[in-house]
Length: 430
Image (cartoon, rainbow, N blue to C red; front, side, top):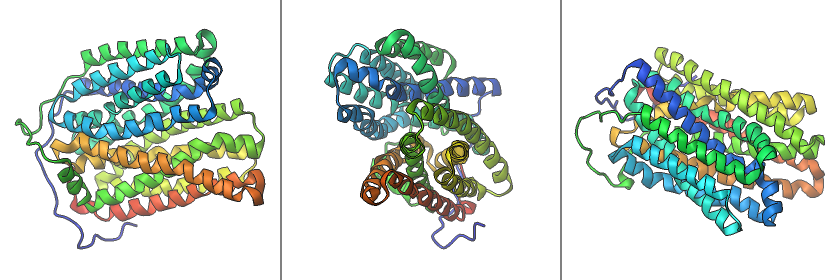
């Protein structure tokens, strides 16, 4: 399946083993950081549930709402992650997580007191900057607590924060808003985040660095060059970007697809997709990390070979989603959202294993920066443009054909991961 590596392969890399903590302590850390990852998603996604009451109260336009959910958050989230990650690599990752969690929780609560559009924009920018801190620092910290061959399940739990957060935001957020209003909902979430920060402070401890010595500060361009010099990482980066393009197509346009093409009410479509993303995504993410780890113990090429398989399986599921009648499309959504995120654990494991110990947080931030700008930035935009172009000929069906670009993206992702797997035999994860 994987073929053979070429002369582009670099020599094996092997560094000292990480500092391994007792199993009970590591489990507690994973649970605490999974809760952080879950709140990370809840606090950014809750706005989608609150848009309508916010629009009515503050008399905002759809364009202003789009700015709040998109540019005001995504750009600052992606860009701020790099300098924060550089700081985390040289200082306390635990401290970065705690400060970031507290800061974005305060910004979430302050949004509940906003009386103008500008105040909401500032709160979303602050949310993006604060949330940019947790992912890279978390990945780096876990890499010190787990041996390379045992990291994938731990990373899968962190990645499970995405479907757990989506469930919390869409299911819990709607009920909370109905009970206490959008302002109080944001204040309550912010307060819960501050409480969680106290729990994290009690549970998580900063592990000692691998070498026992201070790292030498290296320029960011040197770290980028080092990562991109590894063929396996280059293909991983391409495969991840293509996967996220497909994810943005599915998550960004599926509600409109159900409403326009199938005539389903928006609330019903949201409930279906929330369940598919929450249940299918959670099971797929957790199962993917464990299966990839077991396969990689037999042949390390499976670290990227497994994402190649899951993306290849997600492609026909997306085809069925776009082709079947309403009930069939509803169940096909589970398949897409089961196979699509199954790559997260292996991708995080390989990224952290390839990165030097002084650049682990940076490697996670760099990957996040690229796939957010490419995947979440371009995916929905391209689909919207293609749908508009096809609208005169196909009417509402134009969205069905435009979303087919997600199938192409998944197949491209599978191809990139399969190509990268060929280089894994000469990469020693550390």
